[in-house]
Figure 1 (tube, rainbow, N blue to C red):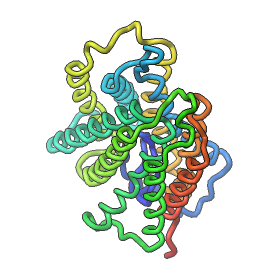
Figure 2 (cartoon, rainbow, N blue to C red; figure 1 turned 120 degrees about the vertical axis):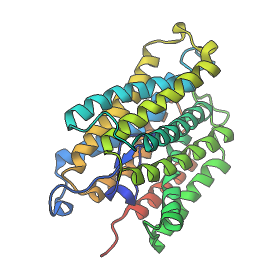
Figure 3 (cartoon, rainbow, N blue to C red; figure 1 turned 180 degrees about the horizontal axis):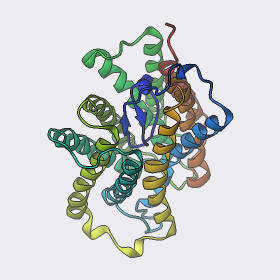
Length: 338
């Protein structure tokens, strides 16, 4: 899930489009004043592009009635985070973070994994019901919920007038996406949008915001790599019985081809693994604010990927919505004067 940045970059380091975040503090004094070199800029843009392509990869791995290929949503999610769990085992070994849980750590990890299950399940089902373009834009609205929760409930961040204006812009983009249907509704396309799918994606964004804030609070008890490893694993434990109960008759090896496997690997390893590792490496050295300003490129990459690979229409209202959400996210993320 992209994932997208918010003012909480100074507190979180993002893992993917599914919403995995952990706190980060600069490891070098004055790191916020270090400008990004071209190599770092290239890596940030690369991760933004990879996150933007996640909804498209999900469409390839999900079952399609037209092609009769792909797997049902809960099964896809379970496989995806099984891959992410294996990656995090390796990550914790390399980063020398504990794999075993200490006393008092199971509770936070269990709830984090349950939130992961709810968020990814709604995201994957939403992707299945709507198109990649709508998904790319609407999942981005989680930032609005994070700001609202932090301002009114946790008190960790007070919304400024500029940030409030940014929230209104991003929120308007969501309304544009939901209310104004594409003028290309009659144009043949691989993916069709739906109000139901769009609403489920917005619900997924809401759950993602809750999960972000919960993990942030839990990091006082559980190391960052450890909680992500276990929240992935517990999420898989939720997905397996749920998928077996609801989807066991819908799964067949004959429905799996190279495109389905490619979509699964992309979501599990490239997004859930590589993007997290690269961004973590960058956040150790450079300012989170300098990195986060690039995050609004993710919807652009996502919409472009959907148009190229899934034949999603690029009508003018999509660009209007994209401009609104990108502008809103930038205003929310912009560094405030001291």
